[in-house]
Length: 563
Image (tube, rainbow, N blue to C red; front, side):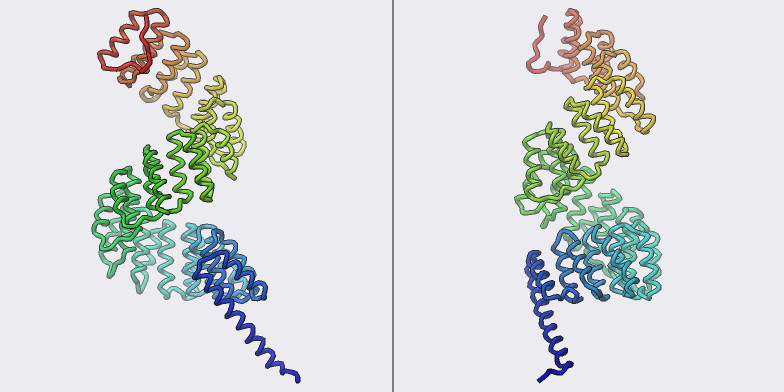
C-alpha cells in the first residue's frame, strides 16, 4: 500500500528533526569539552548528512569555532555554507566576531553590510555588537553609520544600543559625542555610566568631570571603580589612582593590574614589584607589565627571572611578554640566552608577529648572531624603520659596513623612511668601512632631506669616522660646531684617534674637556698618558699620572706604567 504524500513528508521531517537534535546534542558535548578537534569531527558529521544549511546547527558550530579556533576563518566558512542565513544566524555571527580581535571585527562589519542585500533588517540585538566591532577597530565612520541606522529603525529605546554607542564614541576618542548621547538618554543604568566613565578613562582627560559623574551615580560596581582608576593612570596622576585603588570596596585582577601598569609606566618599579608580590591573582597582563617594565628600564636580569617564574607558574607567554624577555636578552648581549629565548618562542608556538620579529632581529644582532638576525628580518612581511634600523645597526657594529649600507639602500628603494636610529647605523657603517665622503654625504642628507635633528650620538659617529681617517682637525671643528656642550662620546672618539695618529695638540685640548666632563673616567687619563709616552714626553706623562693620584682615579687593571 502506498504511503500518502503528506505522511511521507511528515515522516521525513520527523527523521530530519531527530538528526538535528542528535547533532545538537553532540555539539553541546563539544562545548562542554571545549575541544576544537571534537568540533571539527562534529562539523564533518553535519556536512556528511547534508545539514550544513540548518541555521540552528550552523549558529552553534560558528560560536564554538569562534571560541576555540585562533583564526576566525573556520567560523566564517560555517556561515558561508548556509544558503539562506536567518537574522538569528547573522546576530550570532556578528556577536561572535565582535569580540575576536581586529580581523574578526572586520568580518563582523562585512556581515553587517550584507544584511540589506539579503533583505534582512538589523534589530536591537544586531546593533550593539556592530558597535562593539566599530569600537575594536576605532572606526568612527562605521560607528556613525550604525548610529544613524539605530535611530531610523527605532532601536534607541533598547538600552544596550545607546550604551554601546557611548562606549564606541569613547573608544574612538569622541568624548563630546559620548557625553551628548548620555545627556539625551531618558533612562540610564550602571552600564551607561560606566561607558561614559570609560570614555573619560581612555585619555585620562577631564577627570574632574569624571569624578562628578562618579559621585552622581546611583550605584557603582567594580567596573565603575576600575574606569576611574584607568583614567587617573592614563592621565599620569598616580596619587589619585592610588587613592581610588585604596578606597575600592572590592578589587578584581583588572584593578590590581591597572595600578601595577601605572607604576611601571612611571618607572616606579620597586613600588610595582611590591604590589605584584601581594596580588591575590595574576593574569598574563600583570606578568607582562612587570617583565616589560624591568626590560624597558635597564633591569634585564629581573625581567628574565620573572619571565621564567611566569613559565613555572603555568602562565602561557604571548608575543608581548616574549618581546619583553627578548629585549632583556638584547641588553645582556648573551648569545646563549639569545638561543634559549628564541628556542622557547618556537617550542611554545608563540606567534611571531612584527613586534616580536623586530625584537628578535635586534637581540640576535646585539648578541653577534647576525645570520639569525637576518633570518628573522626576512620573515617580516613588510619591515618598518625599526626592523631595518635594528639590522643596519647590528651589521655596522660588527664591522659589516658594506652589508649595512646595502640594506639601507634596499630600505630607501622600498620607500621606508629612515629615522634618527637608522642614521646612527648608517654613519657607523661608513666609519667602519672607511667611507668618509659617503658618510658625510649621508650626514648632509640626514639633516637636509630627512629632517633628522642630529643628536650627540650622530656627532660621535661622524667624529669617529673622521678620526679613523686621520682627519682630526675636521673632527675637532665638528665638535666645536655642536649646538650643545660637547658630548663625551664624541670627545672620546677624537682622543682615541689622536693616539692612533700621534696628535698631541688636539689631544691636550680634548682631554682637558673630558677631565671636566668625566673626572673619574680612567680611560681618558690613560689615553693622554700613552700619547705623551709615545712622544717621549715623560714629564707630561708623569703630570697626568700625578693628576690621577690627586683625584683618586685608579689605573686600569693590567695597565703598567713604564718609562
